[in-house]
Each structure stands twice: as structure tokens, then as C-alpha cells.
Amino acid sequence: MPATPHVGAFAIVPCNDLSAAIPFWARLGFARTGGDDGYVIVRGRGCEVHLTQAGNGPWRVPEHNPFGIFIRTPEVEAIAARVDDLIIRPGGVLRHREWGMYEVGINGPEGLLVRVGWPSELMRQSA
Image 1 (cartoon, rainbow, N blue to C red):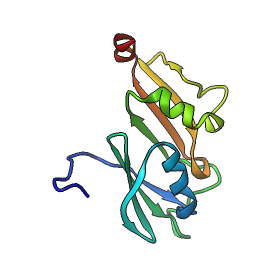
Image 2 (image 1 turned 90 degrees about the horizontal axis):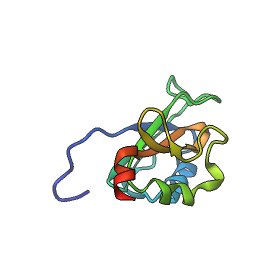
Image 3 (image 1 turned 180 degrees about the horizontal axis):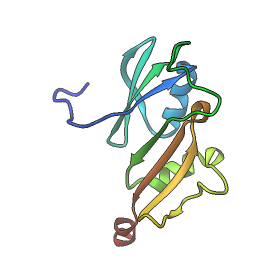
Image 4 (image 1 turned 120 degrees about the vertical axis):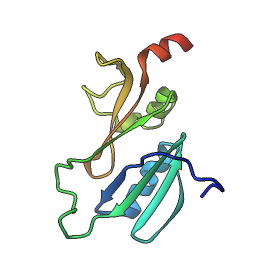
């Protein structure tokens, strides 16, 4: 953990197979920075995500995972290139959306929806 923690809100994502989720997050550019056998903290691209072992109780992740996470970063294209085989097609392909975000939809571990995006206007300004 950094000497001075960052202020923010971070998603806690339940996983049926926590050890299998870690390599997925590494592909997105995140690294494990803390936790234990049942709870893992990953950081990358200015973000932090907490992963927790779902277990058999009420937080068990069903076949049709209801959870999702949005990563807001200007590095949308770089991330999309790293996980091209996981992009949700046809609807999740990298593009400017009508709600003003340049984003991509990614099929994460156990059907977790991972969307990565940055405001379209800021993408156009930097081009």
C-alpha cells in the first residue's frame, strides 16, 4: 500500500475462483498489491479493485453474473489490444458511445462485465 492511501471508492468483486481471476486482471495491467487467500487487492492504471472469494453463501456468483465494473482511463485502446480475444462482440467493440464515452466491453472472469472507457470529447481533443 502506498505511504499515503488514495481517497476513492473501489469495487469489491466476488469470484468463485479467486486464483483464476488474478491473471485476468494482470492482462488488464493490474498487479496484486495486498490481501490474503480469500481477498485480493489489485492496482493498476490509477485504479484499485478488490476481489473476494464468493463461497457458497448468498454472494455466490451465478452462471449469469450480475456484477460489472467500469474502469475509467485514457488507456482504453491499449487495454483493448491486450484482451482482444475477450471483447464482447458485436456490442462491446471499441467505439464512441451515444452517452459520450469511448469504451470497450470485456468478458471478465465468470462472466463479469468489465467496461473500460474515457470521455469521447477528451479522446478527440488528444487526437
